[in-house]
Each structure stands twice: as C-alpha cells, then as structure tokens.
Image (tube, rainbow, N blue to C red; front, top):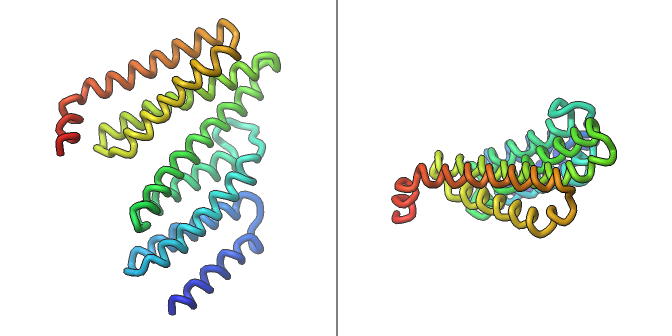
Length: 226
C-alpha cells in the first residue's frame, strides 16, 4: 500500500507540469506538498514525511530557478511575488506537520528565506523601475541591507511575542548579517548620501531591536532559565 501511494504521488507530481504552465506549476506543487504533509501526519512511518519534503523541495527549486526570474511591472501585485509568498506559506504549513523535527525546522527556515527573497526582489525591482540609472546600484545595495535588517527586527519582535526561539535566532542572525554587510561591503561601495542613510537606518533598526529585548527582559530571562 505504501509503494502504491508513493507511485501515485510520483505520477501526480509529474502530471502537474504537463497540465499547467509558468508559475502555476510551483503553486500546484506547493499545494501537493501541503496535502502530502497533512496525510503524512496521520501515519507513524517517516517515509511519507520525506516524500512530502521532497515534493516541497522540488517546488522550492523551481521557485528559485524559474519563478524568481519573472519580470514584475507593479510592486507586490505580480505573479512573482504571489508565487514566492505562496511558497513561503506552504513551507510554514508543512512545518506544522512534518516529522522529524529536522524536516519541520528546515521547512520553517526555508519559508522565511523565500519570503525574505520575495521582499528583496520587489524592492530591487521597484528601485530599477523608478530611480535614475546612475542611482540604481547604490539604492539596490542600500535597500538589500535595510530590508534584511528590518526583517530581522520583525523576527525578533515575533520571537519575543510568541516565545519562539527559532524566530529570535533567525532575527538576530539577519541583524548580524546586515550589520556585517554594511561595515564590510556597503561603506566602500556607496556614496556619501547613501552611506549616511544606510548607517542611520541600520542604527534605528538596531535601537528598535534593543528596545524589544529590554522591554521584555524579565520575560526572556524566565524563558532562558526554563
């Protein structure tokens, strides 16, 4: 019965790109991965969980290789952002049902990676469409750092509010990467105005993250002692 289920899932996976085209293939594969992960949660065997993870990985590979390269003429309202957002939501839903914990964690982290990539692509596309050609490169470098830091602050706040250690770790990692990129790379590539803006924006975001931690210091201390 398990072999028949695996063959059925494989045939269904192959049928999707035959029936659909463009970004709809990735959307359909994400839906299939969610359904497979839900069904896998009803079984004691780990094989269905790995099968669902494989389909999800296939969908994410196509999102990265094909859908991320789609052109967008409007901010947020375009097939590329929808597909990446759908993939991120699918990763988080699958993380709820996938086992073992390593699969669930990988799916959860992948969801944040896809969503962050979606926001970065939208910011870069908007800059390319609206700014003068000579300012695009500097603005894109600045936007990447600011978006990464802002995402980190949001994750830290969510981690504190929901008592989730992974969110706090991912948020602090994003802030660390943003600060490192700013001081190692950005300050040597940006002009004076963009450099000052980057330092000011990152400083404000770090102050916001510090405020979140200091505001909930006692709560965090209790969690660390548990």
